[in-house]
Length: 261
Ligand SMILES: Nc1ncnc2c1ncn2[C@@H]1O[C@H](COP(=O)(O)OP(=O)(O)OP(=O)(O)O)[C@@H](O)[C@H]1O
Ligand SMILES: [Mg+2]
Image 1: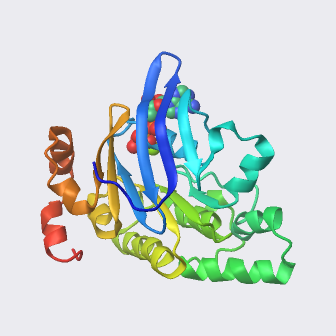
Image 2: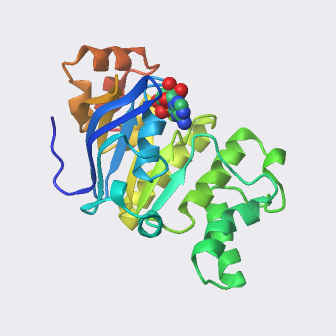
C-alpha cells in the first residue's frame, strides 16, 4: 500500500473490541502532516471509534498511536491532555452544551485553555461565526437551531483554538449543497493557509474526492486500501469498487473534470 513521506500520526496494529464485538482488528494507518486524509467505509464499520482513539477518548486493546513519535496510549492523563490541545474535533453528533448559548459554546475552549481577555475571545468568536455564516445567532441556544446550524456551531468550536490537527466526523451530513461546498472550502482553506492536518470521515463521495489528498477505506476492522484519490478509484479490491459503485455520484467523472462537479 501507499507510504506517506512525513506522518504526524501513526496508528499501528490497533485492536478494539466492545465485549465480544471486535471493531478494530489491527488497524495500520499513517496520517501525513499538512494534508487531508479521509476515512471511508460502511455505516458501523468503526470510523468514529477509530478517530476517538486518535484523540485519546478510547484506549485500544492493543497497538500504538504515535503523535510526533510519542505513543499516546501509555501517556498519563496530564501529558495526554497537553497533546490533546493540538487536536480539534468535530463530533458526528454535535455535542454542544445545551444550557449555553452559541457564543458561550464557541468561547468555551478559549476560556478553558487560554488566558485571552474577554474582548479578544469575543472577537475570535465573531470571526468564526462570520466564517461559517452564523452571524446573528449568538444568543440562541442549541435547541433553537436547525441541525445544519448546530453542526456549523460545533465546527466553529472545533477550530476556535486553531489546532494543528482537526478531525471532522461527517462534517457535511445534513447540510445543504451550498453549505457543504462552504465547509469543503473551509477544510481545504485550513490546510492550504494554515498547514493544518485534517482527518475527515465522510459518506459524501463527491466531497471526499474533491478535498482529499489521501483516502483510507476501513472494512472489517482493517484499512484495506489507502492512497491518493486516483489510486482508490483504480483499486483492484472488490470491496472498494463495490463501495464506490454504490455511492450516488460517479467518482471518475468528478476527478476527470478537475475536481469540479
Ligand atoms: N462505546 C461503545 N460501546 C459499545 N459499542 C460501541 C461503542 N462505540 C461504538 N460501538 C460499536 O462499534 C461499531 C462501530 O461504530 P462506529 O460508530 O465507529 O461506526 P461508524 O463507522 O462511525 O458508523 P457511521 O458511518 O454510521 O457513523 C458499531 O457496531 C457500534 O455499535
Ligand atoms: Mg460514525
